[in-house]
Image 1 (cartoon, rainbow, N blue to C red):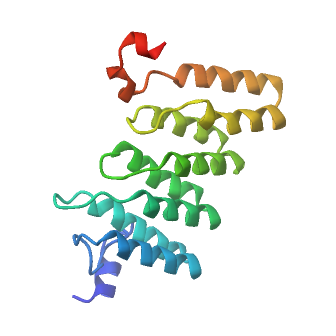
Image 2: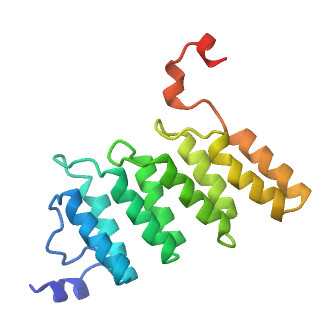
Length: 187
């Protein structure tokens, strides 16, 4: 069966139907090259297929962890091309399986600020922060929250600022990595 025929006959939601490299582990340099090509000649369909392959390839047993510079490139292309929904879905998957993806705190902060700037996605930025707080490698701290708080103070009403502080207060809890620290060291 030809690749094109497999795509037409297959599930419309499955981006990798008919893909020759499905199930094959590609090295990070291949992902970097593909993402750089998409950055130069942006096509959302190609971008989504590359990201989908990155995520799906991590289900294989003999896969290597996706390095942070690849994820940073993926997020920066998504921000530049204004794909908040797809980048958000992908980062959510990556945050939930953080042992397979090396997500950098700076990249996460850049994405949160992008969501904050996108009209209608401000609440999603808060949800992502609470989701990240459940991981071991991203700690929600003042440096991460500061730009969101300052932007809210500058552009929103007092009620919305208080609501934001209340959301952060409810969402913040001790990070899993710090559960091992003695109580005297935390203070």
